[in-house]
Amino acid sequence: MSDMGLIVVGAAGRMGRTLIRIIAETPGVTLAGAVEREGSTDLGKDAGELAGIGPNGILLSDDPLPLFAKAEGVLDFTAPKATLAFAELAAQARIVHVIGTTGLSTDDAAKLDAAARHAVLVKSGNMSLGVNLLAVLVRQAAKALDADFDIEILEMHHRHKVDAPSGTALLLGAAAAEGRGVDLGSSSVRSRDGHTGARKRGDIGFATLRGGSVVGEHSVLLAGEGEVIELSHKATDRGIFARGAVKAALWGRDKKPGLYSMADVLGLSKG
Image 1 (cartoon, rainbow, N blue to C red):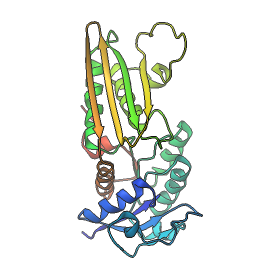
Image 2: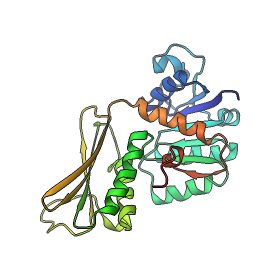
Image 3: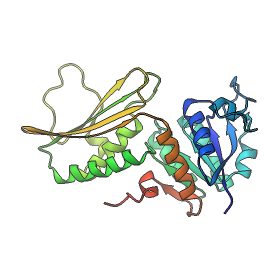
Image 4: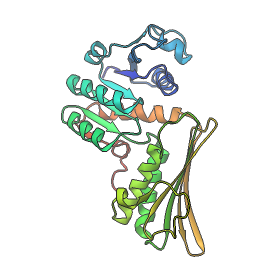
């Protein structure tokens, strides 16, 4: 089988450059296009040079349509509005759309569901093997321990991250809620300030830290009387997310249209 042609959108960003580098290192895939937003000062630049791997002849473009028509997949770690537009294009072109974008709303999710009727969409708050394994462990722990164990999710990211809680924190929260058999939306506590009163039994709490260049740190604490269980993951290199995204694209190459998760890709969706 020939190499899978992949497009990187948001190609000039930190994650975009990492994706370009990882594609160049990974057998079975090739860079078929690099897209940046209209008006970007990086338009027309060589994607390989931007990624620090030397010229590759792929120039950054703000016109994704002809690229989508010739590629087999798109890797997308952009912003919600851009992701929805790319999802429409991916559905039209019937190509794999790997989505690592966070901060998507419920309405956004419904639009992605519609796109998934025509294309393979792999969406996850985190593309790493370790985090998705952690989610399985969190679900199992939350199921095994009743609400006498309070669940708190702590996350820290670099100063430039614009959404909170992180997509990974929400992924872990959803796993905890599934384990407990509750709805995360009605059980989560996203902020505490002032005189809040005692902690409500069954709540799933979130705490957010921002600073420096931290790639991503997440901990799930299950705190009972006299004991605390802590499950955690630390990312030190964005390459883990890029490798996961490329793996997801290759996995989705022969799948039927639908909305999948990274847990599906890794065979961790059940357990």
